[in-house]
Structure formats: structure tokens, C-alpha cells
Length: 172
Image 1 (tube, rainbow, N blue to C red):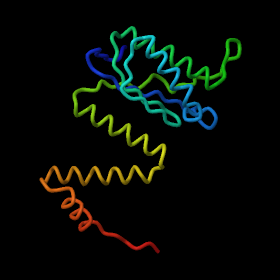
Image 2 (image 1 turned 135 degrees about the vertical axis):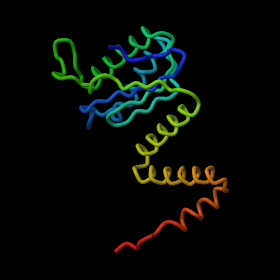
Image 3 (image 1 turned 120 degrees about the horizontal axis):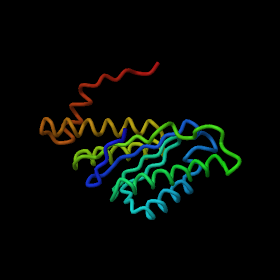
Image 4 (image 1 turned 90 degrees about the vertical axis):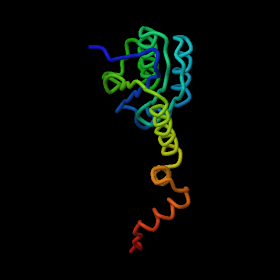
């Protein structure tokens, strides 16, 4: 069974590996992983709108011309990434599957969906670079913005209401 693909729409792909830890993490090999993806994307006519490399997974936000080109890009780039990270060679395989199954793929439908994806990728970027506490701050800021839009308030009014309704307990 094949996954639905629509070359008129952009695609969000997630490549995940449980073996990508420590020296084998994508972050530890970020420059080479990025180089492989960008050179193969260029070869197969794939447009990369965003690329986020995390410790154990990679997010790709792409456009493509044909199903065959995106499939070839995925086969070649995932193979090269796995070989580089595991140091596998012909006659000296890694010994187990590097990738956790097929890549997750989702068609991005419309501007709102695209904006949500870009926000999600930005949160991942910040979490990777700054730590998880920054993700909480961003989500809090977004909830205040949503509340301001929903109730037609200024950001400051929504923020004041949010703080007024929040109970702060002293640490013990």
C-alpha cells in the first residue's frame, strides 16, 4: 500500500532512528547530515523549505515534482545518512535496521497548516538549542496571543488576565 502524495502540495517528513544516540546522534553529525540532505535534494529537484535536525529524528518540509523523485531522494539520502553515522561499509554492515520504519509523511494543506508546522519546527529548534524550559515560555506566549485574538483584547490585557487567573504557589 502506498502513502498519499500530492506534488502540488508541500510535504512534512520525519525520519526517526532509535540508534541515533551519543556519537551516532544526528546532532553529533549535523553538518554531514545536512550536507547529504541538501546535495541529494538538489540532485532530485526537491525544494527544502525547512530542515530541522534533532538528536534522534529529522524534520523535512519539502516540495517535489514527482512521486518517483521524492522516493529516490528518500532512498538515497536515508541510506547515505545511515551509512555515514553507523560507519557501515560493503562487507561490514551495521547489523540491524538503523531507521525506525518508514518515514512519517503528512501533506501540508493550506497556509494555516504551514504556519502551524513552521511554529512547531521553531519550537523544536529552540528546545534543542536552549532546553525544554524555553518551550514552556513559547507555549505560554502563544496561549496569551490566542486568548487576545479570541476575546479581541490587546496582548497586555490578555497577559494581565492570564496572570490574574493563575495561582502561584511559593516553593518550599
